[in-house]
Length: 194
Image (cartoon, rainbow, N blue to C red; front, side, top):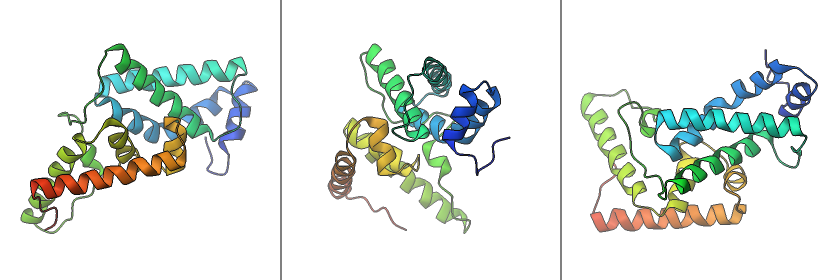
């Protein structure tokens, strides 16, 4: 069983020394964040499952071939692999993913609803829907950083490593996303408060 005191580096070393459970511990430790990151880009549960599995096949092959280096964190490295696989998938389809919900899952399901009354809940759902529609209108790079930061709870360093850009570029994309969201709110004359 994976203990929180065991580092990712130690688990990688154990796996490379033949301990298969160490890899399972790494997957268990990070699966939620990795899967969420994939799903927020892919917008399809079945596709996300496939890419999640493909990600760890690539991780295992890279670890076993000795091509993994310890320059960055294990999680950031895996997130970058997953991100690249999602991008590769959509490039192969000659289209980019759109932000939309399915019946199975909404990225806003993870936001807690205030347990006050039915009216407050309805207003909260309406605000979520308005924000979701606004985020869909952002350019892909800006939409991606908003999703990774606010819905996958990733740091700007993790976002930068995952997307292959500098931290300053990630921060800039977030800044432009917020500017564009404010403009959209003003243009559409939306009220996003109770």
